[in-house]
Image 1: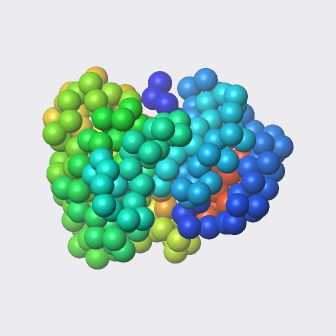
Image 2 (image 1 turned 90 degrees about the vertical axis):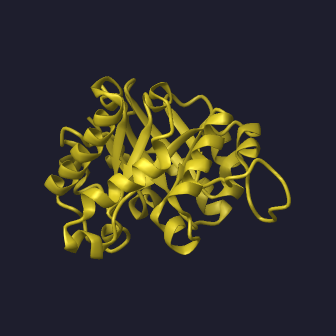
Length: 253
């Protein structure tokens, strides 16, 4: 069975004190992360070490950075490198979130560089893809997402892609309260898996965890996660509420 993942994306939210309180509350809220499941917390850079220390020793629970720079080091004031993340024991990084693409002009080519540098330092990417509303309304979402994947990931080897994590996020459903139906999510996730199967074979495609991101909450997680090609979620707002995210974790297959 593919690894099932509940990933929390805190985005640019919470003070340090609020972050500590949220983690403490979540750890005290009943939930279960089974052997074939992961819970991952993508937290702001200043909180990485603090949250990592709080989660130390917890089975199958990890911390992720929300981004890293596409260069190794140098005169890039304000940026954070993969080597820095590695030096503090961070094992996952979110790359290509729609907000990074839109607000910071991250291109498919740049994201390919980020994936490469993450791999170089042994950090596992959580690679985001997804279409805006105009593309969905035009019925071009499949080709749009396929281009994102091909231009950023198809230089990788089959071994690098085994166990890879993709997060599909329909941009029109992020922070809007709108959610793709579970059938729409399944349709795109199946397409994404087929894109990899065509290029790398079913053996590789069947190991890739594909998460859904877009207004996932406790009330809809079980239905969405229940679809055959949906392997969990990348969760925004609901991950800032301990009881909500605990329920989402328990909704994994």
